[in-house]
Image (cartoon, rainbow, N blue to C red; front, side, top):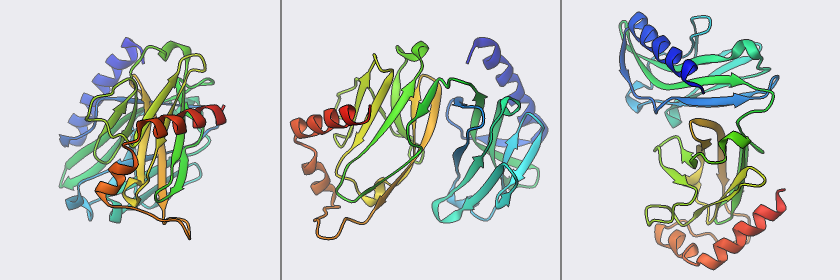
Amino acid sequence: MNTYVKTNTFYISIWFWLILGVESYSSWSNHVLTIYPGGSVTIPCYYDKKYTQQKKSWFSVIDKTDTYTNTTEQNLTVIDHPDQSLFTVTMRNLQNKHTGLYYCVVETGVNKTNVTYELYLKIQSAPDVSVVNSSVSGHEGGDISVQCLYSSGYQNKVKQWCRYKDQRCYTVGRTDTSQNPSVQISDDDERRSFTVLMTGLRRTDSGWYFCSVGEVMNPVLITVTEAEPGKAKDTSESGHQENNNNTTEVTDKLQKYCICIY
């Protein structure tokens, strides 16, 4: 997003907080989401468990409207998932008129709100960042791969695979011990894409993630189901680590995925 848009977004945010009496702001740094015209997207909005019973909404700065949870309209669905402490926003048939700033909002009291997430949505014929599949599933103990695409102007930007829930990110090119060995990222500058390989899957790996390149991102839902019949599973912490200490094996798998998906 250029400087002009960023500056306007900042002032719009301040205006919104003052008008609605925002009590607190717990969002990450501004994210930009780019989508094809006519496309659709589902966005997760996490909130603190203590707000399970509170009203929640998707706020559009474009037309100053709130859409509360458990609402379905022609091209917009907002559903609360209290067991997961999140609500999801699905927007369909997106057009240029939908370009603008949006907020995930939780009402914490009388005239008090908490902005849990801020997103600038941009409709582009050639999205800056996109994913081949926005929903990927696998079995316990198995592997999955996610392919993230980016435009030429983002080749030198920081590329990451992040989990919404705990805000943990894995960065292309980082090899320090803080990076989980069961998550490997391979970047291909020529094809302008990077591939995420998650090995030794556990049920707890299920959830919402996103590919990001610079400030631009795209969400992905990962679903891990029970192990396939007849296949052993190991969901213990130690077993998960042992499965991934063989660097050569993981690297070979990653290379295999990179070749197969193009």
